[in-house]
Length: 117
Image (tube, rainbow, N blue to C red):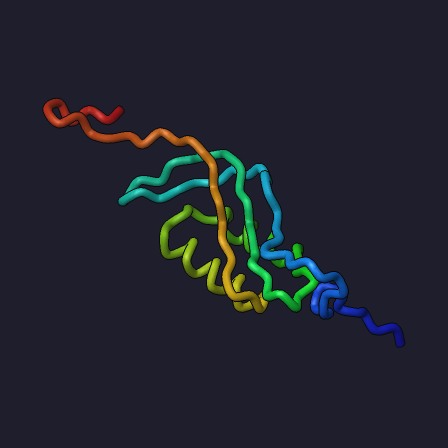
């Protein structure tokens, strides 16, 4: 039977360190929860993992899976934190990060009229 080789988990054969690897500029659409308000947003997301010096790489498909889980529900601080901690554990890395670039409009009540805009 054919066994798959974990190339990314092998010890690196080169002498220069690679400090982080990841996916950059992945377009996404989703939503964010601010207080009780949920607002749509679209933008780009990066997912980066920091490697120990002996690692050759990481499993990028796990990063895509984490991003997909992240954007399936409204973004919150807790969701970001929990997703990053799970990803860090799954990738067996010392740290990982998301970088999210997006614009969204946050609607607020006017102080005098209570109109939302």
